[in-house]
Image (cartoon, rainbow, N blue to C red):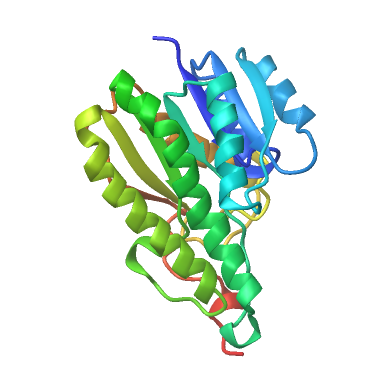
Length: 252
């Protein structure tokens, strides 16, 4: 069947690489969202990979009403989508004593509220078609609420997102809609390809940095049409990394 994906937050970084990978992996249409600058490079990569690309501006910092309206228009004009890869998720690294309520709102609105609103927008069509694939992103250890210094708000938001995804997986399973989570690891430079990442030393047991291709491989695996029995799972793409890096693990 013709496949159509929505990749949010794909102007650059992991989202851009994932959008390109889906375009080259059999998807006929790949729509991406961006916040400020139109992602011309990402659209070129999608087209070069063989898919029809489109970019829609959505500000996930706006009010819930405005975001819901923007997403509704997006689904009406570009949907329906059988696949959602939700890449939106801001990051604040700071000891709790140095954080503010604005940081709290940014972490939970950007990581949790954005996922809830986007799921509300795309799931009705998936249920009606009795087919859907949804992928969210946690962080290393978010499924276990593993603590790291400097990550109190971000880790809390990502752990909440994992809980949301797992509950959603149970509720949507009868409609052949799968919901899974990826926990990316040491991927500091989100633009390098795997052959370059293999030359970059990393604290991960694998010994090298991760690349967007490492994550995109798992996304493509999870959203495959035949992957209907794998849902509610959290997959770590970390090179074996189980602890925070030295900077965040060290005492203040």
